[in-house]
Image (cartoon, rainbow, N blue to C red; front, side):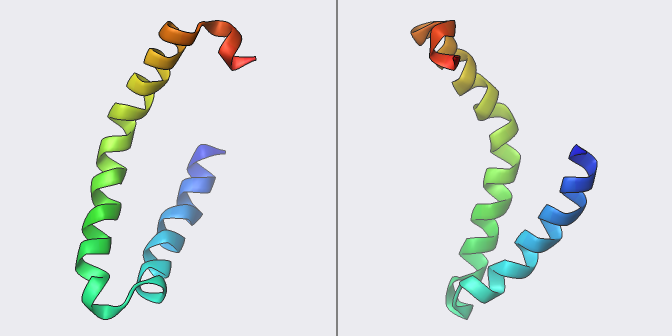
Length: 61
């Protein structure tokens, strides 16, 4: 299921960027999207683990 959702989400994201941003903002917008795509697999689990460690498992329920 993850592979199927990836097959649709990344092309949709890339095609929406020029629609949502002005031409002078396009380079910065693309770089921001690429940066967050690369950083989120690192910082997401680290942030989640920190929240669980600080707030406990009851936070998840």
